[in-house]
Length: 246
Image (cartoon, rainbow, N blue to C red; front, side, top):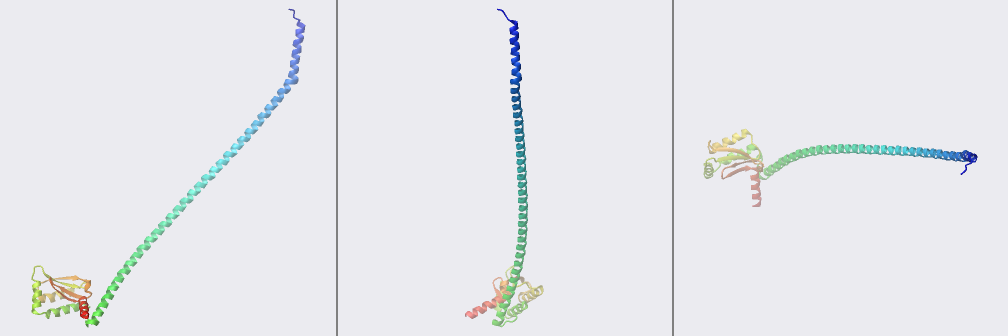
């Protein structure tokens, strides 16, 4: 096989020239276009990424602002609720204290008025009863404590022998005593007068006690173990009623 070196050399040179021409006229422009497109794509991608980052930043800032506003609103609502609760509790406490004070004052006033009314009624009833007896029975002095003593003394002096003996026998038992009952508490001076009158009639050794009985209205009663001598307004009224019925 014969090789023509000159022909081979020319072919190589032609090939190189063709390669250079292709590179110069075709590959470079294509590569430049590709590079320019890649650069444009890169810039577009960077721009898009920048816009996306900006959008994300705006979104994050928006969400942070919304969260801040929501937290602030919740805090304001909590503070308002707390303030309203405190004001409500204060009003309820003040109303309760005022109600308790008013209730206590009202109870006190009612109790004072009740006691005063009871006293007034008692005095009025006693006066009416005494007035009734004074008018109906002609006993103007029966209300006075001393009047009952005088009536009892006169009654004991006028007792028949048999009646006096019965009363004395009633006091013969051991521990037996006479009880002087009156509508109100007797002063010590008047008690001593009762003792003197009773001891003079039944003996110095007789036991004498004292008791109060509002049911008598006024006057007094001598209560023996098994007998009663009454010199009271109540007894006079009962007798007056019996007389009227009879």
